[in-house]
Image 1 (cartoon, helix red, strand yellow):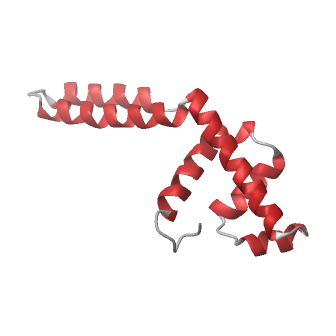
Image 2: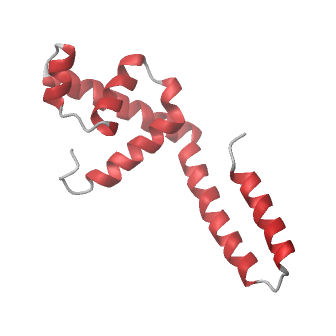
Length: 120
């Protein structure tokens, strides 16, 4: 499924997000093929020519890598937790903005939220 097909963008976005979380758990070949296909938008034919294997072999490698990412997510839920944290953050910011706070207190709370959301 490529970018001009229905739901391709949402699938590509999901795979890229899962890849961000679980890349170290994939094999080198899985990482390479997923990067070429989903990040760099190479076609199966372009990847097969690059690596000297059939389009079907490329397709199977990509499908197995997608399945691995989904399997990791079903067990670890890192993307789900990240999205939940993002949703809670938006709600918290909205509540803070609705409160009658002076600017210094509001900024202090926003700084705390930023620290919670920043990677260590």
